[in-house]
Image (cartoon, rainbow, N blue to C red):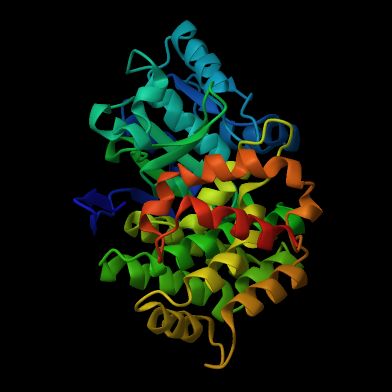
Length: 389
């Protein structure tokens, strides 16, 4: 991700993850664990995947000489409390590495575990907003297997965690990149339509915000545009949502998801700041990708008059194969409706009583630093109000 240097966004051109990508890729798991010296992994996942039998599928390709301990307590939005519980299980079972299986929440939690078991002290000191990246050294070896096509956390440097303070904060360091990612589209075939749509829009938002980030990183921008071409230009998001057994659509959506995370090494934006705030609401369990889908039209309108953005909007339209006259915000709103996602925050249960918390949280989020257009604290009341309606 880009770094700040005297107010200038400096791009970091890094694509570090080794990724095994294709149908059947999980058959390589045993060899990959041995390659990284992992014989007693802590397998971080959630109860839903255990109930679906997907963890049995993963265990079926792990030989008997590799003894996996399962932590299935990943919440929908990963928390420091869950990380501490998983880290204790890691220690109690003398684990020597971490295996993440699931969506972005499980992978982000696993990154937190890999950090926690190798680093002492206050966990919050390692977050990006207080310069924590400089304190993060080598972590426990981590292998990631995504089961959704959305976050791309399996190839990214970051993890988003609800801390004990209640704040939803970012851990970010090259040391948090999984040693190997195993992207097997077969594992996404059972995703229901609503989750396919929501995770797909997470990937789309990653691609768009990365392209719009003012950091100069042509390789990352090209990757983001290719992700948009796959997801929207070739219609694979709509296809996968309409028919979950469409293997070609599933392959391309997993690639778009991976590309979205490779692209946002260039930075993200205020869509994510606002989504992170909503995800931290203590009385709700709001899905991150769905939130991104709702906020994306609002920020596309807000960013429209920033220098150079209209040229980027043109490139985005070309990737999506839209007519030059198409309004991108209107297009995303129509897409959300077509694939069954909510139209606004009110439909998700957010009320005006939540706005003070959301505004305060979003204004402090580090993703604002790489938004296409500077955002001030005074902008957030209007932005949230627009997303409410």
